[in-house]
Every structure is written in C-alpha cells, then in structure tokens.
Image 1 (tube, helix red, strand yellow):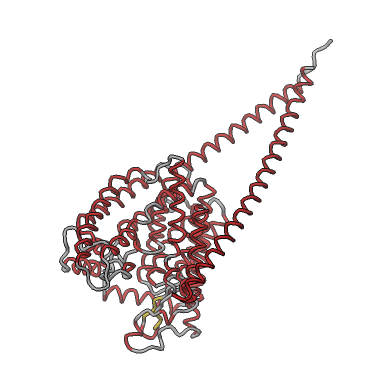
Image 2 (cartoon, helix red, strand yellow):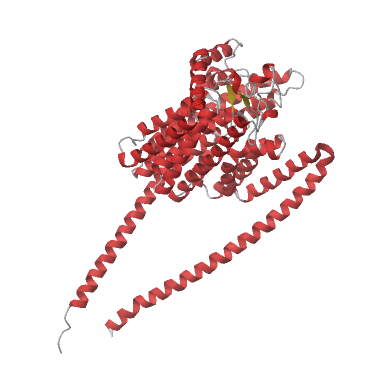
Length: 553
C-alpha cells in the first residue's frame, strides 16, 4: 500500500500544478482584457477632451496650434497613465523628432518639446510610485554630494546674476525665466538615471533596449542615405541653386525628405546633412552615440542574428558619418570604435572579433569602391577644414572669447548662453560646452559640474567592473566609454541637446543596474544546475530501485 501511495503522489501534485497554471493563465487573460478595455476607454475620453480644447484654440492660433494642443494633451495624459511605456515611446520618438516637427507639424514649436510631453508626466507619476514604495528617487547615492554643491551654486547664480538682470531687464527679455529654463536644460534630465535603473530590470529588458536602438539606427541611417541620394541626383536642390552667403548656410527651405535644415552646395565643397534630426549637428551626435550602441549589439548580444544586425548598424552609421559632411562624426565614429575594441577587450576575443571585423571591412570596402569620389571628397574636406580651423584652436578661441566678456565669479546667469532660452531673451552664442558653462555659471559652477560628472563616471566604472558575465560586462564597458567621452567632451554642446542628453543620463542608470542583473543571471544558472542535479540524482535512484530484486516470500 505504501508503494501504491508513493506512486500516486506525483500524479496528484502534477494535477494540482496543471490546475494552478490554468487558473493563472485564465487570470492573466482576464487582466489583459481588462487592461485593454481600460486603455481604450481612457484614450477615447482624453482624445475627445483634447479635441474640444483644440477647437477652442483655432481662433487664437489657427489649425497648427489646435493640432499641437491635441497631440500634446493626449501624449501628456497617456504618459502619466502609463509612465514606463512613455519612456520607451520617448526613446523611439527621439530619432524622428526633427522629421515629425517639420514634415508633419509644419515646424510647430510644440513638437520640438514633444519629448518632454513623454518625459515630465511619466517622471511625475514614477516619483509618486517610488515614494509610495519608499524607493530612493535620486540614484546613485554617490552623486548626492556633488549634485548638491552644483545645485547650490546654480541657485546662487540664479538669484544673484539672473535676479540682478531681472531688476532692470532689456526690452522683451525675462532673465529669471531664462535662468530657470537654463537650469532645466542643464540638469532636467538627470532623473533619467533612476528611470533607466528601474526600467531596465532584467537581461531581456536590456536586450530590448539595445536591439531597439540598433533597429532605430539602421532605419534612420537608411533614411539618411536616401536623403543624400535625393540631393545628389537632383531630386532635391538643397542650397546649390542659391547665391551669396546662402550657399554656405543651412536652411529649412532646403530640407529634403526627412529632418530639418540642411546645407548642400557640393560645387563649393560644403555639405551638412541633418538626417532625421532638426539640424546637421544633432545628426552628427546621433551618429556618434550610435557608434557606441550598435557596437554594443554587434559584440555583446548573445544572438548571432542580432550581432549581424549590430554589424549592419555599425556599417550604415559609418557610411552616414562619411556623407553627412560633419567633421566631428567622421573623426569620432571610427575613433570610438577603436577605443571600444581596446577597452572592452574584443581584440583578444578573436572568435567574435574577426568575423565582425572582416564583415565590416568588406562593407566599407564595397562602399568606398562604389562611391570613391564621395569618400575622397569627404576625407579631403576634413583635412582641409582641420588645417584651416583645428578643433583645439577653436575651443581655445571660444574660451578666450568667454573670458573677454567680463566673466563674473558666479557667471553671467543661467541660460544666457543656451540657445533654447531665446524665447525669453537673446542668449550669447558659444559653440563649446565648458566655455559656455564658464560664461553662465562661472569657474566655481564649472568645477561643480565637473565634480558631478566625475563622480558619475567613477561610480559607473565601478559598477561595470564588478560584472562577471562576459556579455553583460561588454555591454557595461560600451555604455561606460560613452559616459566617459560625453562627460569631458567640450566640442559643441551635446549635453544640452537631443539625443545625447537623454542617452547620457539614461545609460548611466542602466550601467548601475547591470550588477544586479548579473547577480540574477547567476542565481538562475545556479538554480538550473541544482534542478538538473536533482533530476539526475532522482533518476539514478529510481533506476536502482527498479533494478533491485524483490524480496522473496
């Protein structure tokens, strides 16, 4: 009887497990149906409310203002209701923001702020959730001191420098408003560190992030190639049919297919393409950013198919760096790749390095063979421009220009050299990042900002170096080199503009999460190995039991 009871027990347990699984499956289906119905109901109600408000705005701002208001209200409402999905939507929207703004919205200024319609409501909702769960809002804790010092310096500058100007402002200017917006541009996306840390909570989510950006890079770069083809074939005139100074100035009237303002006067040796972004500079830094992201997929993704996708991404990024006409992209994309190969140790991983290196070399060689004149022109242009205006001299000249403006110890005021604050005044154009900060917040503020990015660079370095799993460690190394390069870069101001400002803070949070993902993956492996050993042991005992002769009589 005992033997009979023991043989029936597993069958009963399996039945219970099956029943439980069916109950869970049914509950999941009901929850999905409920969520779907809730989404439809919420979206419908907020859409009709937005339409009513939009119609009321038509007499004041016309159809464009109405469309912008409707899109903004719907986006804000959905982003607050579904904050995690809003963050994903923001990452998808970023590369196409320039195209949406000018091709679909007719240059409506509201669409230039669309990423904030995703980000700010989502952040508000997430902060509320974090407080309810008693989770820290600011991460990592190691940057709290440096951030606190920088914020104190910024608020002092805001009160003293911006406040003094506000007492006697120039006509049509609002110095305090410029300061508030300037502070938002400088540090407003820092909470994305915590967002990235909480959003990417597993290896699957990490792969979703890197694969998504690989796909986005390939799509945008293919559109960039089509844009170049339209210009070179004459389907788009660019700026080549203009006269005088207009031949050498990027223009919105010359936009072609995607993106915003461009410059295309090949007879005079000047090409500046915007790709899918609002300007050539934004496109250049998108390409530089994706030199890191596509590399991460090509060398770190566990799937061979996605590694090939990463290789394709690297190739189209490099091709666009050549044809875009942006010297900084043409220089940094290959340099970044070499730095990543060294710092991530992929040179030593011949099994993975050689196929990708050979494949990338073949693709680049084919491109150079098909368009030798284009490649040669771009290289010659780069060296000619370098000789005429070396970046080091340009940066030094900007620093000297800043110092001659009568720089105060606390700076001239937040936002006074930030282009996006021009709606509240007339900001000074300074085209390099740290001289711009020096002008706005003075030497003490610059030291405070350097302290913040240095502490972030150090803590993310420690985080990625603690990872043991090779693929996760390689992802961490790729992201960390991006943090390192952007933290101390002073050429132009990528930390003030899309998409780098979003990628920088968000990827810092992802790096901080990688050690936890690493531990979870180890626990899964240990648990799997334990199950396999248990099954093997159980199977061995069962076999012995079956072979054991029955006792007689």
